[in-house]
Length: 364
Image (cartoon, rainbow, N blue to C red; front, side):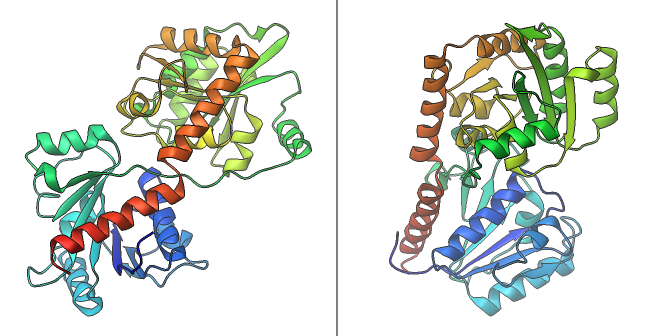
């Protein structure tokens, strides 16, 4: 790690608790644990504000109603002037649009992007940009942002919660899972782009059992398409073979599963893939931008076409027919990928190294 601190302000205007929001919380806590001075600015009453309450740094809460909230923009400028940070880091469009660093300030404004968002009017005024995948960085270059100020830093996920085999069995029993079941797990917001309708159609194409092992699908999450998806599930005759879990803590999800499925139609990264690897699960995923960057097909996971239930069903069949040796190799390779590129230590070091580099470029 670097041998000096870089006081930083981190601004997020979301009221959700998706992947970007959770990473915001994780990175702030990790920087704090490294002895960095961190000031989070976020939306009043938001999930991230609540997540940072216990043993977190002192927060500043603003309305951040929209990208046009000039009162919040004025307050952000006042806070920057008051604390004089080295770095102001913004997450997603609303916070970035509202944040304007005075040209006389020594602070560097870094905008972090986890997707292919609209640039003009939102991001172009930042001093530097972080994309969490190569594809996002290439997109930023294609939009005319200077490549020498675009940096790729991936995400990290929480360390897995280790549980005993007895606890795992009890959790499975709580969900009506017998020792003979083979369980596929998928999780995320129940919205169109996550591809859960494709997953249900793919699962309907599988035989109910494989060599005496009943197949079960668990879907965790909430979202606008929940009612529509449950209706599709019923129409496919899958009600007895699908469990709807809502939102649960990771140890209640990954530890009960035998396989993880990411059926997304669009996914810039895919934190859930990293989480599944950390819990030692084989991963089946569609070929989204994020999955192609993370997964080497048939080495660290099994890839299939997006928006294609037939191909997804084919790869799910491949997963349950894996030899023990190949299954262990998939799991081990995924775990190594996390350690090498997506561990907490590696990602935090990359951020602090970038802060040091940008400060040195300004002669500080």
